[in-house]
Image 1 (cartoon, one colour):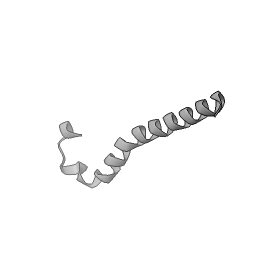
Image 2 (spheres, helix red, strand yellow):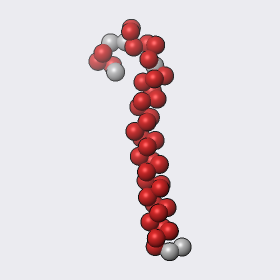
Image 3 (cartoon, one colour):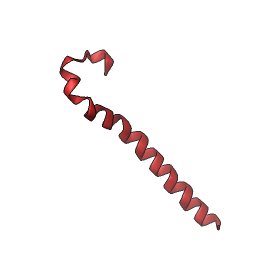
Image 4 (cartoon, helix red, strand yellow):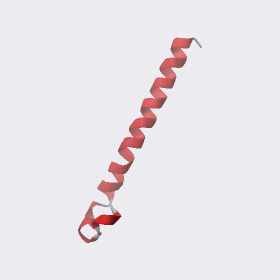
Length: 44
């Protein structure tokens, strides 16, 4: 595996990980959105 292949693999792995980290709290908020009306703001 050449250096360019290793760099491309590491970059795709890092970007996939970053996207999953960014979208994870959004998915939690969407999943719990029906409870937002009765949930105190300090717990969000």
